[in-house]
Amino acid sequence: MDAKLKINEHEFELFIAQDKIEDRIAEMAWRFSSDLKSEVAMVPVMAGAFYFASRFLSHIDKPYRLFGVQASSYKGVNQSEELAISFLKDDRWIKDAHLVILEDIIDSGRTAHELEKYFYSKGAARVEVVALFYKPEQQRFECNLTHYGFEIGPEFIVGYGLDVDEEGRYLKDVYRKQ
Ligand SMILES: O=P(O)(O)OC[C@H]1O[C@H](OP(=O)(O)OP(=O)(O)O)[C@H](O)[C@@H]1O
Ligand SMILES: Nc1nc2[nH]cnc2c(=O)[nH]1
Image 1 (cartoon, protein in one colour):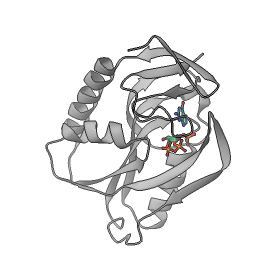
Image 2: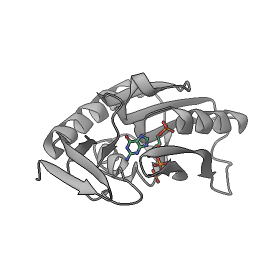
Image 3: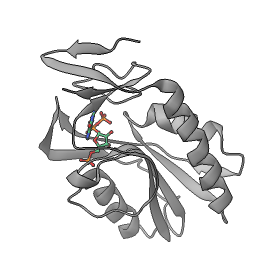
């Protein structure tokens, strides 16, 4: 693992190592499972949450259904005006369901907020958000965040699924912009 790295023009330093992330995900999944009272539909937000979601779900041993959605708004290290969300054409699974949005990160909260709004408009009974990283100082949009792994500062991070212009998702550890 490198202590520092450069992606495009951005310099990053090592922030959280893979073993610490994965221990925390196991803990989150254990806590989530013990709180779970009814069957849920898990909704990982692609592409960034793919890595977190697959690890998190590998620890859940209660029945659930799985429906991925795609959302994207970041260009480089900045959020763009446009939030593009693609939903599955068949949305009959949303009505009366308890949905769990799985996110890699809650930053402004806009992506999770818009997803919640959409799911309630389609008749969801309950929507909650489980995220690996949470930036409370950055949050501008409300969402029902019930479990998170790490509360972090405002700096942009990369690795463990999180990208800069599609680079760096493969990094096993998480790096913070200097
Ligand atoms: O709380 P917010 O400010 O909305 O930021 C969080 C969102 O930003 C990232 O997605 P991005 O738009 O970079 O798409 P990606 O997952 O395909 O990288 C991340 O995966 C979250 O979905
Ligand atoms: N890679 C990455 N994507 C984000 N989307 C919102 N915040 C972040 C962040 O800190 N890093």
